[in-house]
Every structure is written in C-alpha cells, then in structure tokens.
Length: 345
Image 1 (spheres, helix red, strand yellow):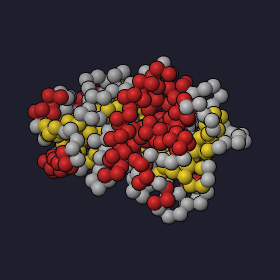
Image 2 (cartoon, one colour; image 1 turned 135 degrees about the horizontal axis):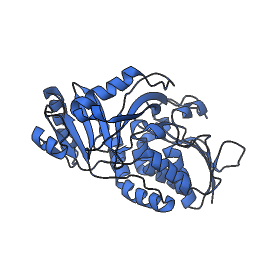
Image 3 (cartoon, rainbow, N blue to C red; image 1 turned 60 degrees about the horizontal axis):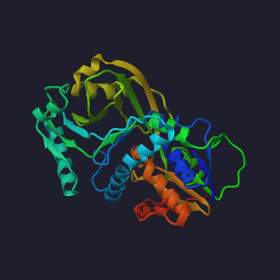
C-alpha cells in the first residue's frame, strides 16, 4: 500500500483521502481548517442537468457520471460517519420570470432532450402546482428529475469523522508516494502556471418553511437558485465575481441574490435572514476541472468551479484508480492539466 499526502481539506481533498484510506492506503491531509473554504459556503446542489452548459459535452458526461455515484457515496459515508448528510434526490424546478426568460428555459429544455436527459416542460400553472409559494407572475418552466442536493457542511463533517484519527494535520515532513494537490484556487500557488483562479461567490442563508424542491430561476436574465433543506434552512445563491481573493460580503451582492429570489418566491421576504457569506470557487479557462499528473508523484485535483460537491465522489474514485493502476479513468482524459499551457511543478 502507498502513502498519500493530500494538500487541501475541502470536499474534494477529504473525499480523496477517505477513498484512499478505505483502500488501505496511509493518508495525511494537510489543512489548518478543513471544510472552511468554498465547501463551507457551497449550496450543495447535485445538478448534472441544471448545471449543463451548451458546448461542454465532456463535462456534461462527467457531471452525469458523478450524479450516478452520489446515492451510494451518500449511503456509505452516512453509515461510516453516522452523520446525516441531508441528501435528497427529488429534482429541480426551473422557473422563468419573464417571457424572455421562458424562451431561454425552452432552449435549455431542447438541449437536454437532444442529450437524452429526462426533462419535463411545465406551464405556469404546473410550476406553481409543484411549488405553491412561487409568484403568480412566473411564466412557466420545467422539471429536472435527475437533480438532487446535499449539505456540504455536513458532508465535510462526515468525511472528517470517517477518516482515521490523526489523518488531518497542519504541517510536517512525511515521505509520501503520491501527493495530491487539492487546495482549490490556492493550488495555483503550489504549481506555477496552473490556470486556476478564484471566482468569488456570495450566498445567503434564510430560515423558513413551505418550499420542497430546489428552484433555479431566471428573472430578467438574472439567475438565482433557492435550495430548501429539510431542517428549514433555505440557501439562496450565488454571485459570480472576479474579485481576486476578496471574500467581503457586500450589500450589493446580497441584493443581487435576494431581489430575483423574492421576485420568484415573495414569501422569502418574511423568512429569517440567518447568514451571509462569501467563498472562492476554483475557476479554469474552460470551466472544467484539472485532474492529473503535473510532476512524477504529484497530481492536481482542482478547478471544479461550480461543481465541486457534485464531482467529489467521482474525482476521489479517479485518484484512487490512478494510484492503483497508474492511469486515470477514460472519463477524466479531457480534463488533464496539460490541456492548457505547460505548468511547472
């Protein structure tokens, strides 16, 4: 068995460490505050359909494969940690606030259908039947049955609980056979030339009852998502800002979230505002992850952008496959870090 050093204790790094430990490898995770970065801010949508983007077919295939692994991953992790992950797989409601938004939703529905995905267009009345708190002004939408959600904070706690005692450390020398750099946007500081940048996202957490599905809405070409949890938490997100490493929560950012959210679900205006926060997603030039070797004995697993939680299980399995066989699965071939400019270790 091998010694594996994982640099970064977000959901990607922790999932890799857990899978490696399960296979009998000795693991160390280097992170002074595991689970506190982008993982602690993420909404946790498992949305291979909702996150699908035109012209990104290899990524879409990876997202679908990732979603297929989540039910077993969630069950195994909940059993190993005895922590409820708040995992649900009851679909997403797409909602259009204006006629222009409805045309955009219909184009997305056509794209999904051509891809062979299950998606059902909904009239305005049918949308409100699924979510009665939606505004009577909504113009229509669609239902995406393949999408789900999980609480990333609970996932991080569960992964930490499932790892062998003493796995997570803050420093020190350790002779690893494989080093996995999974430090999100900060991985670029460890690998000069790696094309990963921070993309700021602000998010709001409310508390209230009445919503049942994840809602992804378009209002006057502004996108918003609303993620209700079983315990009454409602996550509203998220901005996308090129602000370097700034994580300041701004009044304008929160307004950009709550304005379209309340336009879609007026009752949200009466919900309790519990928390506002900001995190830094690891973005890449093509919005797809970077997974693969950058030097002998060193691999990166970063650049997951908006899909880190969804892609955690499949990325962890890919790294274990690389460790055991010397090669990544075919599914990850399009996401090699050398698809861009050469990077130096």
